[in-house]
Amino acid sequence: MAWVNALLQGILIGGFYALFACGLSLLFGVMGIINLAHGDLAVIAAFIALTIAPATGLPIVWSFVLVVPIFAIGGYLLQRTLLQASLDRSPFTTLLVTFGLSVVIENVVLEVFTSNGQSLNIGSLIANSFNPSTAISISYFSLVVLAIAVVVLACLQLFLSKTMTGRLIRAVADDREAAQLSGANYRHLFAIAAAIAFATVALAGMAYGMYTEFSFSSGSANLLFAFEAVVIGGIGSLWGTLVGGVVLGIAQQVGAQINPAYQILAGHLVFLAVLAIRPRGLFGVRAAT
Amino acid sequence: MPPLLHLQDLSKRFGQVVIADGLNLEVEPGAAVGIVGPNGAGKTSLFGLISGDLRPDHGAVRFGGRTINRLDGAARCRAGIGRTYQVPRPFEGLTVFENVLLAAQQGAGAKKNASYALAGQALFRARLSAEANRSAASLGLLQRKRLEVARALASRPRLLLLDEVAGGLTDPEVRELVEIVRAANADGVAIVWIEHVVRALMATVDRLVCLAGGRFIADGTPTDVLASPAVREVYLGTAMDLEVPA
Image (cartoon, rainbow over all chains, first blue to last red; front, side, top):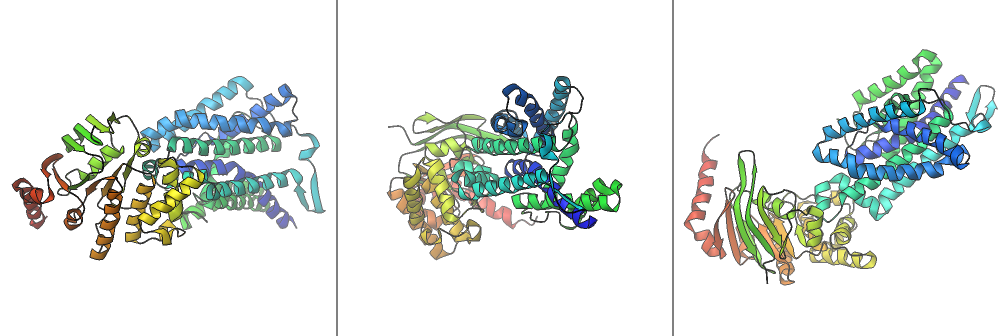
């Protein structure tokens, strides 16, 4: 029964990894930007929620109503300015710029919010769980996060395949120059993709803050898991990212079941195995290079 | 009335490689001009300079009387410059129709119903209507070339830049493509066509220019240009180069 529980916990935590990773996957899939500040953005989202909720009287759980639009607008503007300017130079520049952004964000957060651990307190919601047997405990909150991840990915998939803006985003991702010569304004389309990516990372950051304690440095620690989910699932595939998150989650939980010290290591080993055996990931359309 | 396209003293070099060396060219509205020249003469780069993929070091690209040096590729497309690529570059994740619809909406600025009609019309003109719902990735070479033309036509260009659309095709396929291009030209679209398949050009254009080493070395009727000593020397030179073992 303990193994079944490990499997279930793995799937649940996988939902969170997928939600966290989908923005990273989108930015890389569309613009080729590897966003090293992704994890720090999630942390700022949690801190903003922490600040906004008491100021507006919104319950913390509902603070996403404000944080997500703020992030979407921020993502659009950042892409139109800093990120686009670095993309115009070279892909390597975007790596340096997002690394710089990560350092700046961590230090600003440290200055403003100190190094104390914080958490988004949602009261008993976090503790409620469904227990079909003594060994199995399914947290409602984790289930909700998994459901949000599935809904977000499904909506994103529909948006990209069924709407004209989605088709345009796929076209500029495929061949930016040719899309331009068909009259498409790729800067605007890139910025829309960035707005979506930022909105999803805001959701992930808030979910993280509700799960557990966070501080200025939590972002870079979690960035690695998002990367692993994207690479395991395959770059350019949104459903792959979900599967990647779940595979990573299961590997960690099963590893922890063998020996609590193996939790993180088991995830890394699965990541390495996928890189070695199937470099384009489980559902990837192109190789991770 | 100003010329539709006017290149003034256009120059561009990549390091030591000169790809345009003070080019001057005027193309009238509705004209049909062919460009020939040996490989590496700077023909495709010239299209890059006109369509906005490349920026000139100096000189001006004027279109419809307006200097467009500062416009990017998307703005130039919307201004009325359509272009095909030598190696077709369809958006492979989209269907044939979606490829063309994108150009109708973004390039020609057509909305909703009108954009679908324009896309349908462009596919019809490029004789690709029957393939509308196929994935662009599944097309063969001839159909990919037609898709390039359809996509360019859907942006409602006043000037159509064709980059070796006849290359790699069989004779009957070339004849079909020539008919498509001639029909577009008859509708008032000015054509500038880079082509090695000279018989395709002879059937379409009434003016030929020859580009070599980033300069125009001949300009006139197709027969005169092909007969000119300068052009013959250039082609003879490349032919001899090819025979020298590397």
